[in-house]
Each structure stands twice: as C-alpha cells, then as structure tokens.
Image 1: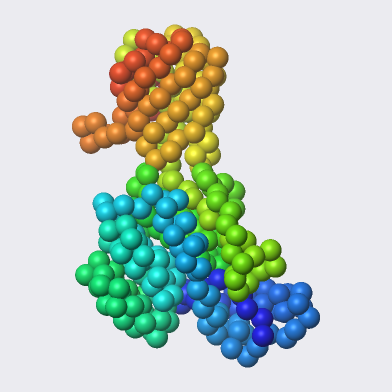
Image 2 (image 1 turned 120 degrees about the horizontal axis):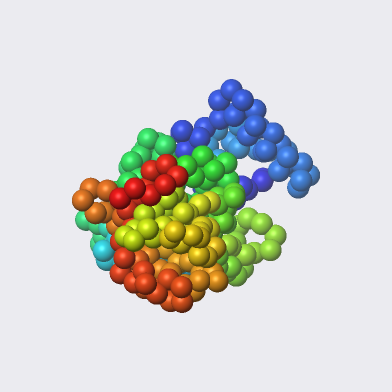
Length: 298
C-alpha cells in the first residue's frame, strides 16, 4: 500500500474536473515511483489517508512559531487534534482545528476532553477555504503542496505578524523566514526520515512612496518579505536593501541602517522610524505618511 505524506484532502481541495485528473496523475506517478498500484481508497476523489504529525514535530512547530498563552491558533487539516491540544496544554493557547473527516473531528473532541483542554481546543468539520483565518495569530498546516499555494494569497492578506508554520511543504516563491530540520526515525513516509518545519511571518505592505517632513522620502519596493528602496530628500541619498517581518522594516545600505514600523495614524498607515544611523541620523523618530503618485506633497 502506498502512503502519502499529507493529511486529509479537504473538501474544498477535493479534485473535480481538471483537478481530479491532476490528482489522478500525481497519485499514479507516486505509485509508479514505488512500482505499485494505488490502493482503491487512495484513488482520485476519495479521501487521502490521514498521516499523523510526530510528537517531536508538533512541538517543534509550536516552538518555532513561539506560541504562547496570548495566541489564538488554527490548524488546517487538524486530524486527531494533537497540534491544537498540545498548543492548549503545553503553551496555554486557544485553538481551533478544521478537519473535513467527521470521525477525526469526533476523535479530536474526545482527545481534548481527555487532555483537560476542551474549553480551549475547539474542532469543526469544515472546509478550510471557507474558514475565516483573520482572527488567528498562528496558522499551522500539513497539507498538499498545491493547497499551500492556493492558500498563499489568502495568508498574505492577513494581519502583519501572523505566523504560519507548515510541516514539510513550502509556499513556492515565498521563501520561509526560518526552516528547522528534524530527525524523525519512525516517520511513516519518505526515505530520509527527516521532517522540515517552515515558518513565515506575514509581511506588512510597506511598498510605495513614503513622505516625511523637510522633503524626506522613502521609495520602497517589496516582494513578499524582501524589500529594497531608495531613501533621500531633494536628491536620492542611498539605495537600501532589507526585509520586513510583520510590521517591522529593517533596511541597510551605504547610508547606514534604518529601522521602522508600520502603524496606524489617524486611520491611515504611517511608517514610523525607530532609529537610524549614518546618513539617516536626522530621521530618528520621524513619521512618514503614505504618498501618492511620484512626488511627495504634504
């Protein structure tokens, strides 16, 4: 029997039409790779076998996301509920598990009762693509690679600073902020007996023209969490490169370093410089407003 390295294929991701054919091709290719035919229950259109996340991987996922009692966590494809239950029991967080298989939802609820965390660990039989992700500070998942990519644009629109952790599968061109590799000797799938845990922090939309007092300007371009831009006033002073993590921006270049944070100011986004050095020393504690067009008019 071939065992597949993902959890339940959710209803929203169940293959129909072209997607059914695509999954059939994928399953057939996997079966061919091991010289076996796919079992009847793993054919396209059926549920993909549920694979549990090893306990050390569960713990690593939660530690990498720095889950704490202040967090609300959602696990997409929650299986037997172990990630949500561990987050509640070990870290004091509140969590929701979304799962499409009714028996697994019932098992998860029973497990939460036995663990004494039923008041902080909720489980629903629900389509993950019909689930509102915005209330949660941490998202965990162990899904098909194609589902990760379908989720990516939804995740990128979430509140800056939202932490996303995936077991094994990445987000394509959106590279992780951190990856941890773990030895998992009893892993049920794969040959190398390793698990990779990836972390992303949703970046703020800092791109555009930012205008400060005295003609100061920041013109920023962003691709996921990677940022580059030009800082200056009446003339461009320095080309800078850096990253945005959540709402925090860090740039460095010939003009020195600059750290800023995107915040709300009067109902509009403002970029507040926290500290600076070198050429940008005069920008300490300066607040930039979002400009429009090519010229700052404040």
